[in-house]
Every structure is written in C-alpha cells, then in structure tokens.
Length: 287
Image: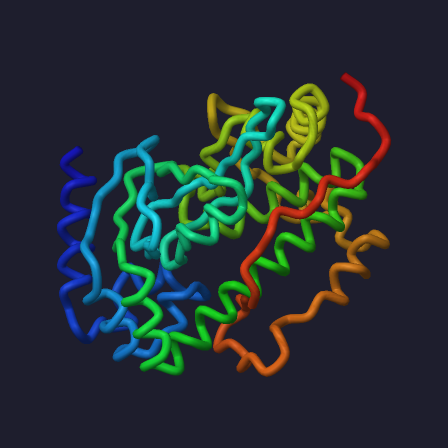
C-alpha cells in the first residue's frame, strides 16, 4: 500500500495546485479525456470544487444523487442488473473522465465500482454546472465527452450484428486504448478483466467468449491469465476485429460530434446523455 498511498498524496497535491502543468504525469493520463481537454483555468476551477476521495478496488464510487464524480486516477466499471438477475457491464471509465450520477440513475440504477485504487473528486451537480457555464472550454469538453458516449453506444449496437469472435476482438481493442498505460515487463498491454467481464462487455455468452479468446490465444494474438488478458500481437487483433468488414462502413458514418459542437483538440469527442442500446435479435450462440 506504500506506493498507492504515495500516489494518492501526489494526486491530492495536484488537485490543490491552481495551475497544473501539462508536463505532469496525471495530465498525460488525462489526454484526450474531459480533464485533458480543459484549459488551465477551467481545470483549476473543476478541481477546486467538492472533495477528494480515494476508493479501494471493488469499492462503490457513487451513491449520492446530484453529484458528478471526476476520476483523477484509476478506473471504474459501470454495471447493471436485468430483471432476470443477469448482470451487464455497461462501460468502463478511466482517469480524466466524468461519471454523472443522475444520468446513471436514469439508466436504471447502474452501479459504479472501482476496478483499482481510484482517486476521485466528488462535485455537486449544481457546482459543476456553474463551472460549465463560466468556462467555455469546460462546456465544450463536456459536450464532446457526452457525444463520445453516445457514439460508443451506437457503435456497440452496430457491432452487435457481428459474430461473437469479432465482437470479442473489438471489445479487446477498445480496452487496449483505455488500458494502454498498463503493460507487463515485455511491454504488452494488460487488460485487468476476467472472461465473464469480457462476455458482459461483448454481450455474448461466456462459453462463446471463452472459445473466441482461446482461439486468439492459440494463434498467438493474446495470452490468458487469471483475471487478466495480455495482448501479444496488436496488428493481428485489429485484423480479427474485422475493421475492413461491412460493419466498419456503418461505423464510419457516425458523426464525430453533435451539431454545433466545437472540434476537439484531440481525437476523442462526445453530446447527449447515453442510453444503453436495445438488445437486437441475432442468431442464437452455441452454448
């Protein structure tokens, strides 16, 4: 816990600083996300609000309505339960992103838990709205952030038409981008999720996902560990994701931003509050 404690103290100190330099390690982690898109004044305004909180892995991240939780380090997973009792993983959020508690409640009471030691800033929704109103860069960054969520929800709906193996590969590719900073001694990206969690994200049965992952391991694309997946051959994973398939053409037609939203300084964009796409009908997967 010594290293974790030092990290928490360092990040808390970063939150208190009014002029955070882009050379700081935390800003590198936030690049392309809400906090990384802000100008220094807007970022300082956001980080001056609310209170900081360090959450251990597995702990609940949000439990009070009317809050916005800004992630400073670590990562969280958003899950929900269907009426049948089956659990779904809706999304994973990383450092630099925002979790809107009221938006999650509107989706049916989704739960947010820390996937690792996570440092957050809990801000009242009213205070956050005041910062957005006072700082154009914050308002534009939040708009892009929400648009990216909606775009991702649409992409998941489109990908749902693909075979399980393609859905699994595309899920892993997305996770590679989020967990790019987690690498083993060989420099390979390590995704700290179990096979059941991959199955939830890919919206496929566990046996079908296990077969897809085993096939990727047998061809040298990845390695399977206990609650972790190591990506060995990223180009081969891209090929397995079928980015040249007809589905990719439909994804390319998705707008980069909502109408009137300023173009982002980096590759990520966001717009409206996302809703979990309706499950589509497709051929039954083999058990």
